[in-house]
Length: 116
Length: 117
Image (cartoon, rainbow over all chains, first blue to last red; front, side, top):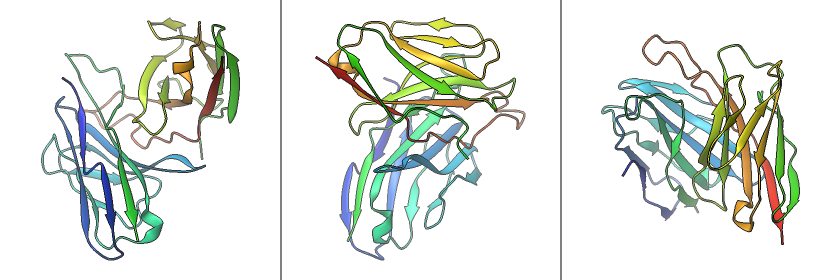
């Protein structure tokens, strides 16, 4: 089954304790992206990656890092989390599926992060 | 800046057609219009997309104006399960291998559709 898997789904942590949210897709997609969603602000893009070793900033990259060492994985790293990073995070991927590229984004189920 | 404009909320009676508008007046020739929806706090789900012709699939229809500056998503017979936030975005997805295309995608706040029994 084609899917984007995020872990953890829920996490409560404390300020300054480094954490990583993993994202993995099994569709061999080139493009991957991270979003955060906050009440009243919609979905805002954090970082995106066009392919392995190619990443770029989205609208709200401050306080986050990403890496793309393998095609299937795109982890989101919070080196020193702060309470304003409490949010719902989504990973998404896009690319050729079954030989076709429709530009459709496939989203994970979300990771709800609370920073105390 | 957001590339699309949508009303913040709409109501629709169950069983009636829901027509959700989207303005994308600065759309370029290579950009497609995509619609997604998000039910509660689940991951957004793809609905439909199109370039300039009207499109229909099992979920919805997409009507794009001739000048491509606006579009309408139509849910022909809305049910309670269609209550969700609907997002319209424009995207040029070509060029993964040429460096062209759009990768910085802004979803905005979408339209919250409430289907009323």
